[in-house]
Image 1 (cartoon, rainbow, N blue to C red):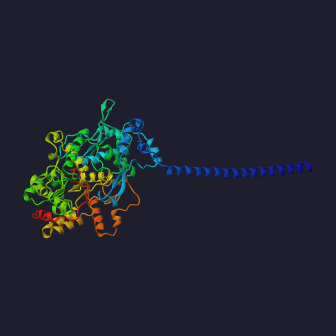
Image 2 (image 1 turned 45 degrees about the horizontal axis):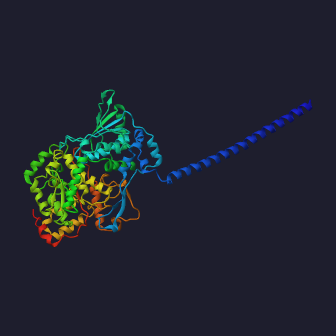
Image 3 (image 1 turned 120 degrees about the horizontal axis):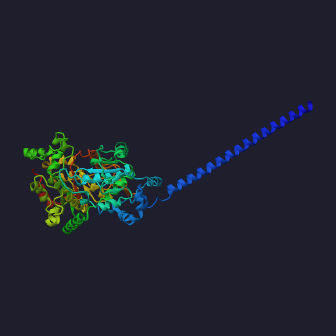
Length: 581
């Protein structure tokens, strides 16, 4: 009995020992497995880090790949559009300089040839699909350049909403009463094909099961950003499937993600091309100006009655002027009662033709300079233009250098006539404006993007006081002060800081800058004039955007030669004669 009990105890001891041994082995195995897993995890992590580093430091895909849209239909068209697409992007390297003969201070710059999108973002975007029943329509507002900003932003909004864009409608009911459609001013087929990798664009809204779509009409606030569109418009678009945004000008934020800003540039500088007939006559205008002078200035002179009425400015014409402009002003019901003195004191009145002429002569442009004047109907016509023509006898316009027969297809349409002026101003050597309107901003940005040519705009806030006091000083004193006040307003490459100003005026996200080159501001960092110019420039950039029905205020000027510091003695008498009121 005792023997059996002893054997049972021994067996229990052996069983317990074996159990403990088994548990110990399991613990050892678990620990080794855990270490193995840790090792595998560490190795995997290292491999992932190596892959990530490889993706970051490896050169990005070519420009052709980078512009692939998030729309599958665009991807399918890749092989078809390839040759066209490359043609669009072939922008030569250009030189950014203050003036053509100041090569020592030039900055190298060039338009970006592709979005600098992170490759991972690009891959995910390419997999996104355009919603099959999501159509965006746009009704633009204002004149040609105001509508241009709306068209550019419409493409970006369609991209944000992942919607199909219907060719935008041009404003046919504003002050100009121009009946032109999109295809009568812009090359519609080029517009569609050159953007096919970014946004799907169609010429008209398709039928819905045999019936016409009834789009939901709505308006968004000014400066609406991406999130704003996704919150306000996307739910309506998903429900109604077709939405029309009305009064579409400046309805997209000035500051957007870099990739969206670059899409803006691509639309503005590559996709928006005038029709062949406009381009051909525009080329003829430029060629004829070049026959008259190797270099010429283009002046966009905004001094039409409607513009003066809208601005609320007064130019000394007595009760007759107040009555004429007051009657026009009544059509803008939202405008408050104006204080002409206050408006001019704040630099918001365009310079008169005489004042523009005096400013240019003070800057050193002689009477022999040829000027192309882009303008509508000037208030009081020849009476107002006479002082400018006396200062610059070589005075030209599209009406004087093209025949009536050549202008006949365009003369009844303000938008097409404005397009001709746009081409001539863009091709000029110096572009000058008497205001800071839409055309001034659009062309200033274009001249920065394609290679620097000066865009001179008046520092109206300071020049206003100078013009009031011009009879109490000599010509030399007047000219010296004009040159001082215009520092920062002469269209130098680095005049506007990156990210400052309206984006169409300063498309810095789309321009590659050379490293190691100092800007004029950096070379003269402690200059009092530079600091003063920067302060004035910041003030200008803070000016409010145009109102709901703001006509397309604009000016323009160009020239390649260096501006002389002083006007010649022979010219003093001639210029001083125009100082009297």
